[in-house]
Length: 502
Image (tube, rainbow, N blue to C red):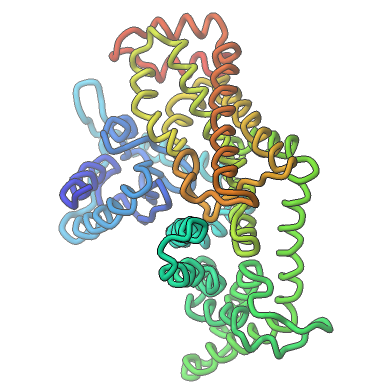
């Protein structure tokens, strides 16, 4: 995508979210532009969804516009630049509410009531301590995903060169490039943890760096000699959290004149000593236990475990609880070189695609929904499920449940093969669907790993399609939705009416 197109997309988005003065924060993850908005009533949802570049919108702790991988990383800086320019150049926008014949000024009381209701609803749904903590954990690891993906693909390429004996002179160089980031991932985790929890990022990174320093091999803790990297990302997480608390204590108690000298010294010293003599060994044992449990679970109950994991992943995403899996994935990648959980969880997206295809077939009279499905399916095949989830299956109700069933059968298939001795894993987190193929790695040949994953996708597609085709709609819901024969019909009204009862 050209710079001009990225700027055009950003320029089209800005007025539809209330202008620069309505934006309080701008960030992005793998697929979504995440915005903090001051007044939710100024955001024009339908107009945003109608933009060609927008794959969907999601309301959570932030207002999230789904743009897709690659695109979002290019549009976000353009959008942020427009926000900054708009704040400097223009006053805050006046609230307007669209009416039948154009924008008309609402009453202040109406806006206040609407804003209060929206804030109360969002706060009740999203501001639980567990969800807020998990979002912070995600904020630590999500910025690392691009490096994980890049290094993972390079590792896969290096494996191919090694297996085929091609360009042997490049193999050591590619191995160094692929492994360098992972060898220091604890430092990045420490840096991001301190940043996320209100400390000085470089101090968090400095304390976490102790974990990967070769000299820790001379330190004895819990009666055993430590080894560099012991505790991994879990140890780095704990070390940086401790550093944040020590730093905050110092900021409160150290005189201002001495702060620049005393605070960083005490923070690194105290947190470093506790990390060496109190955190590294337990964190290392916990990390080992995670790997052992994951492998044992899939080796002894792979089909059942895969069925549960694949079937429950979409509801976990809806609740925001899937973020708890990110440190587990990262720990497995750090330990084994790949995470065996991600290919199983990716089957949830396959079930979603199969369900969407069934909805397309079952609603020949609803051109609007079929158009949405046609535009969202390519992204769905590549593992970007938000447009299909929020635009199709979730509002319809039953198709969301049958999509979960498709994911369960796909996950059960991949888990079964793990139980039989062929494990499929991913060298990075983030992508799924077809986009996961370049990152696949396992305990067998690459061909075997690719075959298991590809067949799992096919099972997920088929199970999601069949479950949705036969059980996704009640007769009345089917008649109502097929009665929407033109683009002018308000499909949202139909979805609201039939979604709960199916």
